[in-house]
Length: 516
Image (cartoon, rainbow, N blue to C red; front, side, top):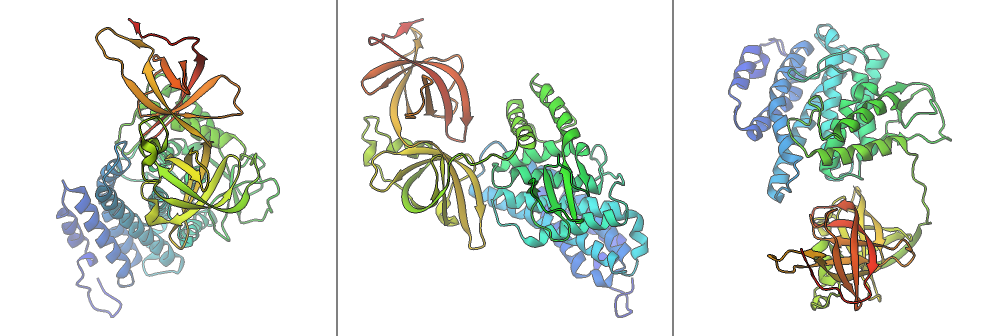
């Protein structure tokens, strides 16, 4: 193949046969090294692109991109797992996945750019433009997914690239051309469908879901992607809006939005019907085979709960703030996680002498939450859904909250939004209401959420994980009194806690163990 100086290039990617030989030598049974090698070759494709005709560049890119897909699915399964990864494993998998998606997205965008600029061989890929767009957006989705998994700041250029992929398809009329995303994948897709799915997924996931939740949410939206619709005129039923001329993250559509021709409005009506039908199937304990989780198998209850939340986010209006936020500067002692919080709860086990841990400065606060900004190295272990104990300066009582929002800024600070469950937690001891003759009475320690305004007669408890059961009544001792707790519901569960509701009934006299 002639290079830019009229001589034959001796680079191995300049010849299809030698490029295939490279792929044949990629490890078949080592997905991590396979994706690393392929990422490096895709990076080379972009570096040497000016030496190649555009149709040759895309042919080679297509070969390497398709060869990586089975390995990518395996690494994705390994990364988005229900079992916590070690820090080393998490870093290694994240780096390999993020590197591949970055080079793949940049390579597809380079192909699009060279086509728009009339590069040599451009006419040879005209019929392949829908595949360029679909795979470019898929790789861009992968980049976003890995950034969201670490609550990282999104590079503004990614939104420009997204606008380029969809805008070119729309302008040239191939946004609805159906193609297979990759060999071996079921069904077909379009540039418009991939674009809409990305907008919906990012809009409901970024900064508010755990990595596993955002992965499953993305897969659920991909399943229902054909039901998403894009309009170029204002649609009052629209959920998200994206500006092709000044690309920024998708925004929830507000009634007072200024409308102009470059806005695209996303509606989810037909997708909601499909998701609603899927929910009915999941409630029967069945996960349909046509919902792809990259080969992973997740518990039906987990998928169902995430789907319910997704449906709520796609149907409910934006929540309005019930309590005003006040700018304030106050220091909080914090304890991250159930067991560190338990050390701070006075349950008669001398835990109050425990070290009080980190101090966070609060930026603003309301009756139901607060926001802190701290350097990332000081936020080790803080994730969406993390349990946070907090105690203001000069206050004796510890409170409890759950991390609901996370994002990084350009100074590598983590912005942490915490929903306050209670401003006072009380350590309590629990025991099974019914003890069998063969078992000893087991005492559990838990944290009672003191909620003074609550007149429901309920008790909200933070407990060790997998403690709550709808068939398990408990006896609770607190402040010298005994209570019978009748289980009502598991409100939420995290990596190291259950948050549960019980009906609370005070006992007139001390209750002896009941022998079953």
